[in-house]
Image (cartoon, rainbow, N blue to C red; front, side, top):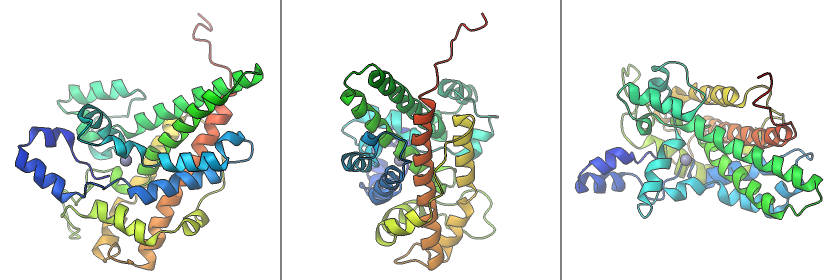
Amino acid sequence: MLRLSVSRTIAAAGLVLLVCVAAHPPEAQAWGNEGHRMINRLAAETLPASVPAFLRSDAALNEIEYLGPEPDRWRSHAEPELSAAQAPEHFIDLEPADALGPLPRNRLDFEAKVFAAGQRPEKIGLQPWEATEVWERLKAALREYRALQAGGKDTRGVEAAALFYAGWLGHYVGDASQPLHTTDKYNGWVGPNPNGYTTGHQIHWQFEGPFVAANEHEADVRAKMTAPKAIDGDLFDSYVAYLRHTATYVEKVYQLEKAGGFVGAGSAESREFTAERLAAGASMLRDMIYTAWVESAKPVPDPYAGK
Ligand SMILES: [Zn+2]
């Protein structure tokens, strides 16, 4: 979804608020409703058979798909505190984030760094921390599932929890395949502009909303997904690498926009590009769910080991 900058909006007068809301369709959502639902469904549909059946059943696919847009349902003015706190979790502007040095692994360490620089986290974004934390919730639930199952106990409660975490996670992983969620050029070019890219505030929603809804189909996106794999090594580092790969396509989005690629049916190139980005989100989500399952079998490290 377009960044309805909460701090800016709250700080602004009523007139500005009205203009802001009018400029961005109220139904606007990151990747739009259609893109998020597609990413979540494709991820769940392509999970390896070693992942428990409760995450792959028809009912699970429907629930995980439904949850694709879930965090965008938390942006309502009816829940202003929730909206303000979670809005920055959908994006990260890597330019100002990197200007502060290496990204710390913990959310609060990053926030402390941002505040110390006289800035605000909601301006820069909290994407990789939210995604990592929700992934860890999923892993914890799957570890609990394994323990209950091993003890011959009822697993229905933990299955519902794990399904929710998997679907919730999908939203952020999906957002992070959209290049405009990784940059301060999130809705109009900023800074030196020798190529004359648009500085208007339409490109973000134009690309991820109506264009996807009108032109992107599940079969085409599915064909561009990678083969399933468990993610090796550190999840936070892998996730940040995924974000940085997405960020390499920021200028491409502006080039396509300049060529009229997001108007109407766009071009073969813009449709292919967008399908690949949706597929990247679906592939990463599938691999993160699979990795949570694999990692949930590992013993919990002993914090007192060697002390
Ligand atoms: Zn979002």
